[in-house]
Length: 274
Image (tube, rainbow, N blue to C red; front, top):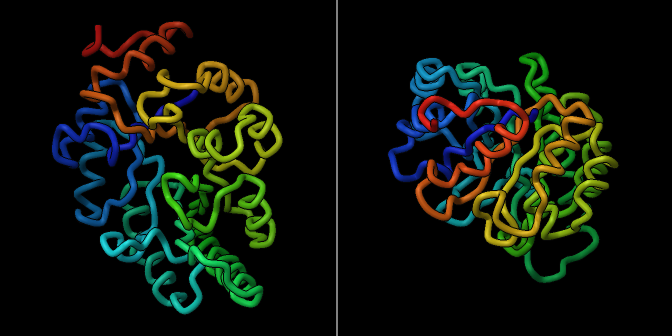
């Protein structure tokens, strides 16, 4: 059965961020992820994880100036030093929390067409930055992941397709890299989720889920997630499945999908949900 991680950036927003760890554990999650931990010291995050018996599944490198519109910088020529500094900022958090997967956001590119030279420079910058980050993280047993994101939610994002991501990592050539396959983004951009999962499975470093098209609970929408979960089991997936969705209401009330799936596979609900 997949191991589910609550995404604390999107879920449990009814309470302050540091209280979301307890809320997730109470609802039966044994792992969490989120976009960014940098508003709090590493030791504070680590203490919350330890206090509630949680594993840190994933978080992102600093993305640049998020409020100003940055969505990563890994593909942006001229910001190489800033990207390298972002790896150094994230590393103490990964070491304190025991997190073994970090996501590097690629960045936004101009909406208008640009020259072949500019496109080549962007790709070479992206590859070089990812190689640098992977090499820096490797001695600590940390995997670097990249994620294709759909163009509806994030127009202009550099990385949109599964094959594109796997081709880039092949060029990076570092063993501690993988693709963060978010079924929500993949369904919107490409569909054919089961066959894409099977085709790319060897290079998948993390899985995320949400209902399509509204990014609510995964039992709402067009994707048959129980079938995908069973396929992950059949393929031998041992990583986490990040629940990166926006609850339609109170987070805990919307977890019927999780409790029903676990019950169908013979796993009891947590005591708080009985």
